[in-house]
Length: 263
Image (cartoon, rainbow, N blue to C red; front, side, top):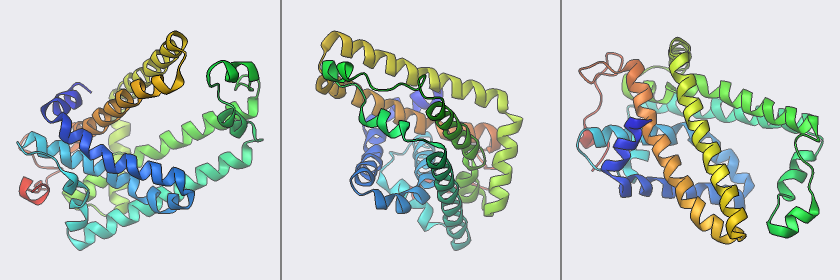
């Protein structure tokens, strides 16, 4: 996490600029939900793009949007493996979402639609998770399954891109690496969870003081975006600690020079 902040501090504007297309994609999916079928397979490539960006910074370059195009310029077998990873990830995530919908009794949707918004929201007294065991179980199930899904995909895109692993081998190697370093990953996850909870508490405190949701959004949204960017910037270091040797090779395969991943 500390290394992620350091990498971000070297080129904060460039890193924030990388988040613009990601944020734009999220907005488009929110407006046109059918685009989720196109967006989900790209999620592993987003994390890979930020890994490439961090590697570019460490090698003295400045990351640009070209980091998201770099995986598509790799050798054909690697591109095919990355596409396979994306399709598997999207299929698994859709199954998790479908399972959640089957379990949910409709309370989750009510909770989202009736979230408090100022005094009017408080007066409406929407249902809570504590009052709906099925909604709580569905939330915990989704979080658990999504967390488990992240394990094989944590390092897989980077292993395909930098070391030429096939799809199955990359998923297996990522799972083994996460298991062998489960203590470190648990601490890593808990720290980021603490950050997210801290932001939520800060938002609640500001809302109680300011009483203006619009002003609160203008304050918390940039902070949340920066935290998200730093998180993505730190992903490379989790990969490097597991697979990159001291000479800069990824699991024995030479990393591509900066000229291939940034202009």
